[in-house]
Length: 277
Ligand SMILES: Nc1ncnc2c1ncn2[C@@H]1O[C@H](COP(=O)(O)OP(=O)(O)OP(=O)(O)O)[C@@H](O)[C@H]1O
Image 1 (cartoon, rainbow, N blue to C red):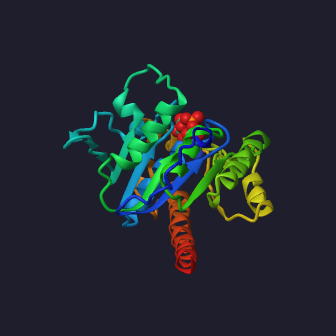
Image 2: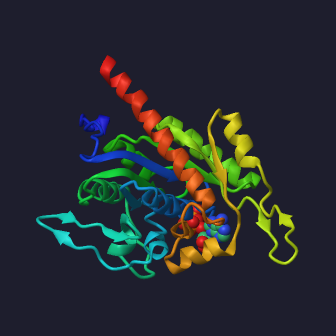
């Protein structure tokens, strides 16, 4: 851009949207979308107004996990009406290009889609707009931070060393694009054998908490590997629907509460900075 003498416009807050929070991971398949969806539903159940952007354009699973796959309506000239499911407004490439064909895209088109999802969807008033990022480091995050200011990011990892190695790269990426990391979630932390009640650390355990401590970040909590979490995702009925008192969902509510209070704290700090300048 600079080489062409073009100035990138400064990121603009979305009118009516208080906090944009990204959910990322280094690796794929660690449960990033599961966390994003359950976090969104939990925040909604806690009384917040919540939106969710499925920015995982190569594997848009949010429609399946929220149980709605119909195409969104276009209103007025070119505004998209988000789909509402379980109290969460959402948008996904999966709604626009359904089926099993992958979207093949070049960088500029990807950037356009992210901008469109932010600016041309009728989000209305939101306390939280959660963005489910594609795994890895890269283009989508750059498009995101060029378009809107982010309150922060949540990083999801399993406790395995391989997943943690990639999670550290995600932390580095957020640092490079100056997005504050709200904290780290350990997913698939352990498995309780339904027959013998023995706890098995399939992907090891405690690694994400140690990584959080190493980087001076908040540990947002650990989630069990549990078939009902997978079933909830596959059936479009995320376990968070069971409410904060449910044993299976309480981890997600703990994460939701921590994210909500961190967002307020971060925004308070940023406002102070803005007043000084
Ligand atoms: N704690 C868990 N217990 C049981 N199953 C889980 C858990 N977390 C995620 N899963 C399941 O693992 C699979 C992968 O999860 P998910 O799609 O959320 O990962 P992801 O990190 O978003 O993947 P990608 O970004 O590569 O698409 C899904 O089938 C999901 O239901």
